[in-house]
Length: 285
Image 1 (cartoon, rainbow, N blue to C red):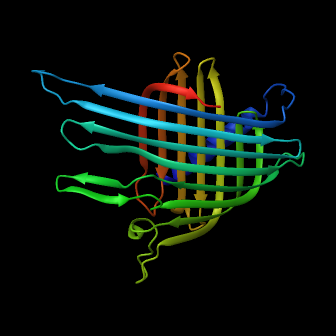
Image 2 (image 1 turned 180 degrees about the horizontal axis):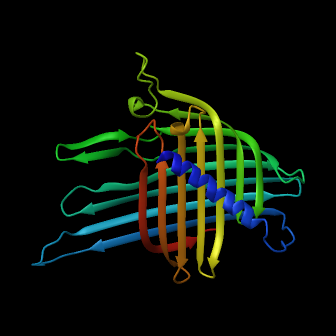
């Protein structure tokens, strides 16, 4: 099954690459800085009073802040993206629980040589803000926290941009998984007696970014990341983020957020997170 995911992801990338080569005439490039900072607040609430059919009061909120700072010049492109997401939900008298928590920053420098492919260097860091728990009838157990784990990836290789809305790159990558109190869950090597709080891997990384306006008020953004430490198909880490946003009015938007994540060192099964959100959007830049 994991092999099918990997091959399927490569097939999607290949299909995009071949079809986008036929994209019609490109516009003249506009050099300089492009800056964007957008915040979105999503809230849902249900309140029941003397509701004989039964049910629970619910309240949930999620705050997303997305930043994009790109400098494009004739000889280079420097692209920086940042994401901060945090949300909680409460059902009935139960204590509020975290529903989403993510810190992410990525910086990619690409040198333009006028070839089909260009050399690049990239850095990425991912973590979370607050402590995370798993819940059961016996109570809750902490399983993560700020910088616990944190993922750092440094890479260099070749990138190409077959169309204005897709960028792909492939290169050698160095990945560090850093922990503090939850090393056994994320970084420790069970084959050794010592508990390692940092796990370092060297491998190959493929990243494809998509940003396509599907309609006047609808935008699709996606990122497909594949990392292999060259120990076999089972050792391929997969992260596939998909975000479909439709603007209802100038400040009201509907968002479908879907993520597929697989890291055998964390779980032998794939992980999926999906959310359908309606909220207020404000552009700071």
